[in-house]
Length: 409
Image 1 (cartoon, rainbow, N blue to C red):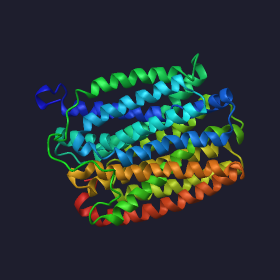
Image 2: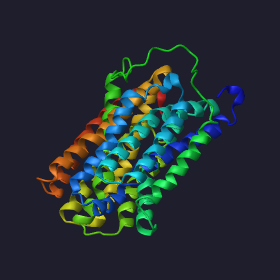
Image 3: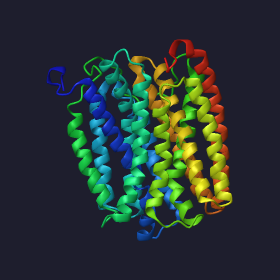
């Protein structure tokens, strides 16, 4: 769509992209509280849940590697529309094929959509906001992008739980509803301004280059490690939280499943918004403290066992993960060259979603041989070490850059 045919302002387009991004990420976690229902319907063991979830993460990683960066020349809007339509395809697969192979296929397709949209939408939001509010600090766009990502992931389990608890056909109706939402979002996105010159010459297509921003390898490595550690925590709650709640704490209410995951992601989203004007080094210190306190509470809650302590730990750690993830997004955006922002963010998301794949697959492989509590304790320890290491490194780089790019300024 040319500039002359544009039907939406940059600011309206900014919020349209944020809404579409939120809808796509929400759908990514809608199945979380539905897994026990799928298990009952198809009679598959708990480790299969981890492989179904891992199919989503693999789809994200494959998509980021092959497609996530091409919005730099193919266009942000075009890739956003395609991504939303791919989510619609995932909904169709869920509706028509809900055995284990179908669940794996649907989750993979949905992961492809999220991978396509993550980098393109994040870059699009930054560029639209810059055009609409040129004097505003870039951290606002990064915060909205992070909130759209994590806020959607927070809403998904709650929506899925409401369908599971109150809807007449919870394994089909949520997918029908989101199918309609995706088709509507695709129409709206057609009117959003494009921020990339799609007619400019560009290099031939190639998969995502696994290259760090020039001269900023250490800073980018710290940011991507922090993002991956944050996503590893989210993976725990989006894949296995219902299983822990049912087996360890004897909870059978689907609404509790969804509300628990919603609380973790909701804390991440709220923390991002509340601390948006706080200096980056202070944010990272808060993130590390939240991770440490939260993971220790999760482990203690599983050992005692104490449901309130487990959930409280998830909320506190979730707040830390939200702050860490937003800081990683802002750092990566600042390090990227303008004409390679999509590529740099695609690499960040590629590494971050790697934090979803590896832990979940390892947990799934370990569960048949090791107790759930032992797996949880090892998982918490590894995530804590990775988070503290990344946070310390990110804080050091942030302090060095503070006079030039203090987000609070």
